[in-house]
Length: 295
Image 1: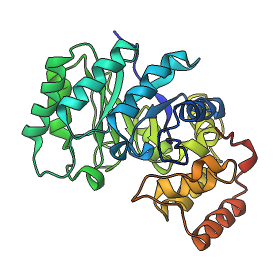
Image 2 (image 1 turned 30 degrees about the vertical axis):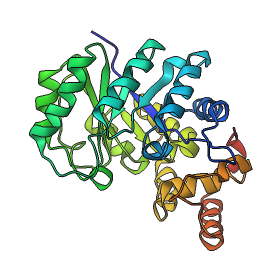
Image 3 (image 1 turned 90 degrees about the horizontal axis):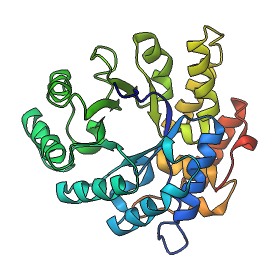
Image 4 (image 1 turned 180 degrees about the vertical axis):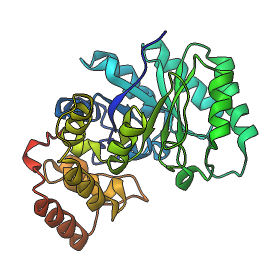
């Protein structure tokens, strides 16, 4: 029996240089800082990491450097690709570097149903039998929403490969029950409720900055300690939810280091009014910016 994936995971930010090329060193450094802050691990190239906008060659560059990190066992690779062939190739490269856990969303843009989704993942697993895949359920981004039945069918067909789901559409985490299968809601606001229902943690954008708060709730829940800071955690999340999460997170992190100001178009930082609002809100919630470590 393999060890189940669980805990507080951040969908890591991608740091870019002034020419908008992937800054490999600082992206990895950022992920390490997030783990130091309290997260159990980091997903590279999730939607928060601008994955659809980053070239395959740059992703490969980063994956080639990842084994040097002291936290290499805490990383999950998001493929963030629409192309089946590119997805398979990126997974093969990741595996050659010692990475075996993946977060994979079905392709965006095209309309399809459960049967086609099962076919998509089957094609991947037929090529790469030895892998652990967390399904990524986010209808808003890819246009497809996993049904409970589809997840169950995939987990039954591939019990050793389909090991979990990140649920950012929130139609699964309250009712889906599969033995030894990890369920991660995509928001801190759903963390405590999820834990009470038997979920295994969260994978979210904002744990790039709230990792310490989310980790406290996760640990306290499992140790029967006070959960009173959960309200604060949820309110911090809701402050970010008013904006594009990538824009908000990069804007906040850019207060620590200007390297976070670089975003790939069409993404952009918050405008001055939005920035001031967000920072004022976080201050009102006594959110401690000082503990955030910059790349």
